[in-house]
Length: 311
Ligand code: FDA
Image (cartoon, rainbow, N blue to C red; front, side, top):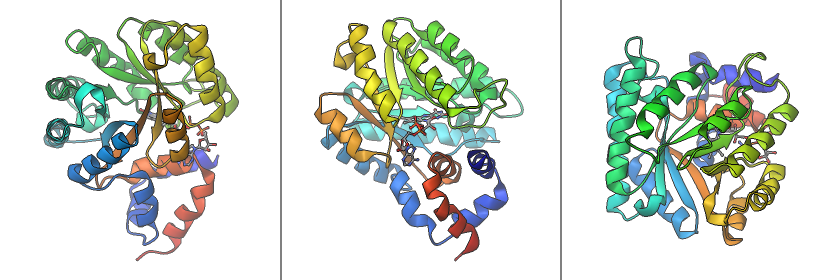
């Protein structure tokens, strides 16, 4: 229930205004977000790479409503990968980028899917020139079909284009089976968006069980699984399933969010695992931050204080 309220708040303009102007906000934002600019994000990227971690950068923002704004977000990404390459951070995919389809046009009233596909193709071309890759984030359940269509259309030209699947959705085991093909890069997460019971599993237990089932499908397939979770049980399960599937440690990677379980990220990397940190940056952090708070009710005090005290 609390999670649903917070997820609704992540889309509320009024709550956004209250929280973004609150004085308590800055410290919490700094924990989860790498700064406002690409230059600041590149600096944090360098530190994470120096610590033996890999990185995927996300320019914050979603639900773009104008084609001009979608084009601007696309330019931000192409500029970002060029910057990462110039700084020697991108080669071999050490730092790659994650893109939300609605940030580059999927939700436009006209030609949204076409616009998003063209913009993602531009980002993929720049990433290829920079020696790195792109992963398409997965958003609200209503975007799954068009997002997977875009992936399918672009993989011919960009075979290393990755995507995200959400174990909270009932369809996802089938999607994992369909995407368990050579060269396929699939990031498996639980899912951060509310969805009706007919579409998603209502109980966390079921979402976790679905995650384990999907992880097994991806591990036994010929693709490159990206295990995006902070859940200790699923993390412990990962090398066991990889071993049963006869996989080497370099044939899959763990992924975690910047600011969440950082000690565990480094422990896994020191133990020889490949660990990629999802690193958001930019000023449009509100929806991202509230989704993080929804995952951790202990952070609710921050949210309530923000609403009660502005300035
Ligand atoms: P769960 O929420 O059950 O948490 C397990 C444990 O992790 C908690 O008990 C706690 O210890 C710790 N933890 C989790 N969240 C925390 C937080 N915010 N602060 C502090 N501790 C926390 N979702 C989506 O819908 N589309 C997407 O494209 C992506 N992309 C993505 C990339 C990467 C790299 C990650 C790690 C996650 C995503 N997600 C996502 C988000 C994902 O769907 C999910 O909401 C979060 O990862 C939280 O789920 P967990 O699997 O960590 O489990």
